[in-house]
Amino acid sequence: MKQQICILGSTGSIGTQALDVIQQHSDRFEVYCLTANNRVEQLAKQARQFHPAAVVIANKDNYNELKQLLQDQPDIKIYAGREALDEIVEADPIDMVLTAMVGFAGLSPTIHAIKAKKKICLANKETLVVAGELICQLAQQYHVPILPVDSEHSAIFQSIVGEGDNEIEKILLTCSGGPFRTFSDEQIARVTAADALKHPTWDMGAKITIDSATLMNKGFEVIEAKWLFGIPADKIQVLIHPQSIIHSAVQFCDGSVKAQLGVPDMRLPIQYAFTFPDRLPLNGERLNLFTHPLEFFEPDTNKFRCLALAFEAIKRGGNMPCIVNAANEIVNEAFRKDKCSFPQMADIIEKTMHLTDFDPNPSYDTYIQTDAQARAIAAQEIKR
Image (cartoon, rainbow, N blue to C red; front, side, top):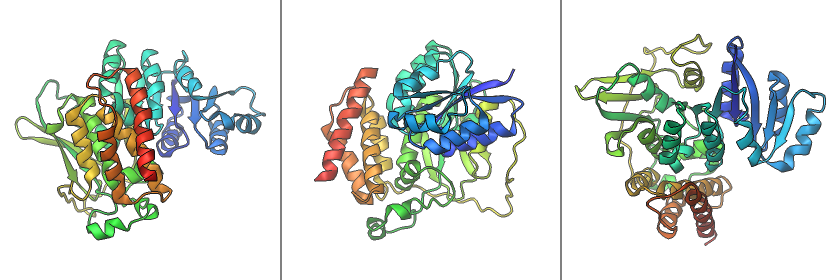
């Protein structure tokens, strides 16, 4: 029997690369459902190629256009709306759900998928950033595996497989440093969204690429690693590694360090999450260590304050990471639309952290309320 996969966010960078993996192993995997938010034409094209049982367009305004594009595909069921995302992941035939949506929107369908006892291949880091404690509790309650798709967390996972209860002394979380690693404060003050979208090693969506430039993405990955591997943040060290060859490493109590290396290709961690514990062949470039130097630097948290704010959010706990995530989503979009400067993003996030109501013991409803309040505050600060 082929494994039935639901891809939340099939038109994004992760989603499209996941479809390539599925295509290479069509004898083992089959697409049950594809979803997108606004990219109607691309979603319709994917549906024609992979013939899923269903497609969901989250933005209801795009429903009629999608229905028109797929009118000659009567076997494909078409749904619309955020509620449809929550419902489709619960479908009985689905074996695993790849959560490749970006942002807070990925939280609700992930919770529904866990409660439906679907294997989770997690690419939506905001799910654990916002509600890590809740997600881990649910995964344990429903006996659902959560396999990381982020290249760094996949590398950590691969490094600890087979280690049993051996004590982890430190996680070494690597980071390319983004395009502005060597810039002065004066240069950073003048950068544009177009500059920030030119990532030196990875091909990613716009939102995550901007987060990589500010190092907020790495801050979120620290939070994600904390929950995925049960390691306190003070045992997670961020290393700038411009070549993006060592995707992350684990240092054990005897001083030994295990790392996972590979070319910057997201299909590798996607496929590993799909096939674990097996490794299958994958077409693509192979690593040549003769042509790649391996360099490491400490991150400058004064220059890249978003990373420091993420660590502060971890330290405070409660709904503070949810506040940071909501504010970051607002300023990230504002920067891309030239409504705030690169340095202002950290300023606005920090102010939102101070102005939003803090709750040390949040529930799911608290996260919803916190997200809305923090977004409103951050949006107001942008207008000032």
